[in-house]
Length: 156
Image 1 (cartoon, helix red, strand yellow):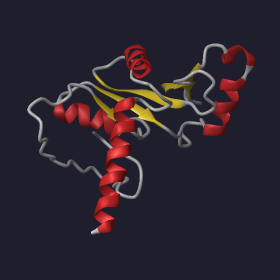
Image 2 (cartoon, rainbow, N blue to C red):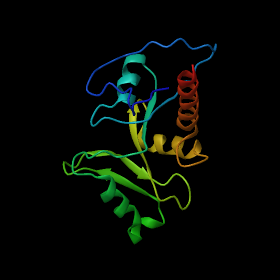
Image 3 (cartoon, rainbow, N blue to C red):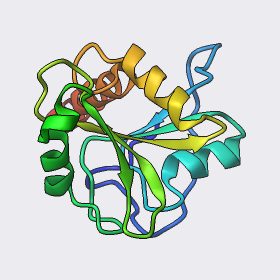
């Protein structure tokens, strides 16, 4: 699990944490919560650990002329409404990923980008397959469990 959002995020620093997993088998696909412009945490983890990764964000931070409000307006445009997905092409022409509605009727999109050794098309398919709700289930479960762990720590 890679959590790149919130108070514990070492923004602007390159930090690798070694976490001992209590399970014999570890997943072969990791999800990232917040991609950095250009070479995000998913890319970084994928290269360092030599594993396939996908970038998934709940929010879009201003990058290359793209804004969250602008992207939402584009998703609401009549020609994009039925598709529920738009390509995130910046002012530079670079494709940063996609904004997509992961569930029917959702007002808030998720933002999907390539990490390492996974094409954008495959990343979109995997995110679609793992969404029971708006956010892909691996991220949702990690968020639920990490919040519960923090609550337990605060009680002590």
